[in-house]
Length: 494
Ligand code: BES
Ligand code: ZN
Ligand code: ZN
Image (tube, helix red, strand yellow):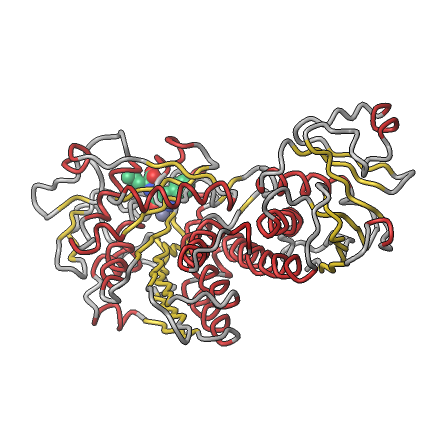
């Protein structure tokens, strides 16, 4: 991983092979820009996503519309793209803080760390990044003066958050033969061993039976890789809130007997993205020493075909006693989540958040880049939407309504696992889950459909083609906001 060093020195006094300069809002007259004429000759205009490496002066220029955190992330990641094939090992740059030193410095480091993610585990020929060290000067674009310590702290946080995000991508990008429910469970166990205040419990099929998780078990039945329930607990010394994250962990979704057409089946290794997000949120929470009790509940299974597969027409009994008519075995995530959500409520959470690559309909509704946010509590939904700006993950709400809820009715069971209409599929999936949320938890629950951004087959922004670690940064920034609120601290002052 790239290392960072912070210097209480002017940029010019720092020794590095190359320098990175951000051109903010086309301001070519800033004192840091020494190559205005060359840039002009090269046709560099400072437009969105423009970045250029000038080898004769060893400087990289990158444009940035504003000094909002997300613009900074994008801008620095664009800068690094221009030096991808060079052999430089050190690069230096100043700060671009505006009013928010920690937020903007974190964004800067995150942009570098996320933008340089590579998944090359299965490549014979690797092409690693040459840059090993980023030297940051406390000299600021707007002439403000900061202490080295506050900048170091922000970078340390960025390292934790970006590492959690990148590791979440690794798990999602790993092919299904190498990330079965069992392997995911061992990964969680090993991860927990290395972290402070984390316990890991793995429930096998016997456990699922004892827990009456009939819906979860049915989904997993045809696979030769048995299901696992993974339960991680992070308990700091003192805590006054309990958060439970539930993740859909389909290590493969073939669709089951309602088999997916071939072109829709590829990428379904990404159906474990919610699980991977939950796992790495708790990892970062421990590394950041967050002062809350946090649980991650993961339903890990494979949705496969076989002689003993669960079938359309089957009726399943969920952990909460409700019966479900299966009309499509490809709507499996909600079945696994139904049982996991019921288990999660036994923990008496103050906040219950599920993350799942639940529906293609969510991708149709919001596009590939946006997380669908659903729930009953408007304030809670808004708190997540607000964090979008800081974290850089896009969110949009999809509203529940009583008419869509009725579409899940079944003639012969308590409900059907699919809607009777082809419209509003992301919301009806959310409303299906609502059947498993007890009255006292309705207002504590949020459902995040990450089917779009979790896995995109083209590069976008600072994300590489493949997994993006969707949900990790969003939830971590959201959790951090509770800490700020409790201490009545404005993030800016930290
Ligand atoms: N894992 C899929 C949803 C999905 C689709 C995730 C595309 C990522 C990208 C889920 O299990 C599924 O197959 N859902 C069905 C539901 C339908 C049968 C009601 C879908 O979206 O088509
Ligand atoms: Zn499916
Ligand atoms: Zn699925």
